[in-house]
Image 1: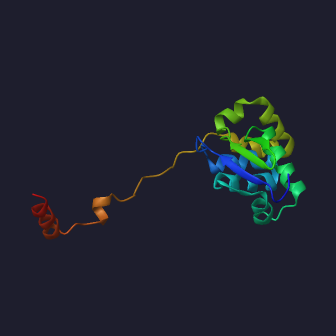
Image 2: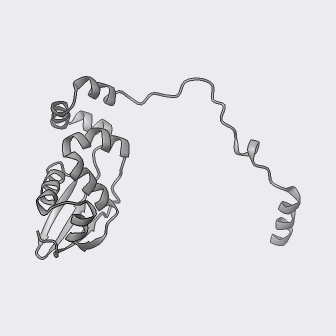
Image 3: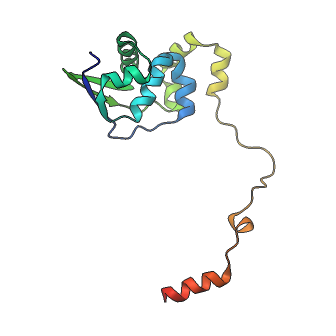
Length: 155
């Protein structure tokens, strides 16, 4: 893969994306470079490979390593039609599916402290206390005179 080669990103299903899950569960597995590349690919359509190299301050080896890490975890598929490449993005697993995948769970446990993982994998906690949020109509008021003028014009 050369800097002058072109790329296109196929994101036909508009990857389903939970930033918290992706950050907490995938970042330790893929590392900063692959994490940043995936995020950038989610917003990219096409261009030259040099775009990724310059934008992420990567050397060609960093780019290829990041692509390998992403493809190994099925976050992307890479297609070589030299001098053009297509990157097909896939959604990361949601928290529940990630936890059910013994391989991913073990890989994550090998990267971070097991007690940290247990906290991450706990179900989301519900808010505690009395809800005091205001309703729309409690804060915002419409001027009845202006409202009636609009209604008369619509009749």
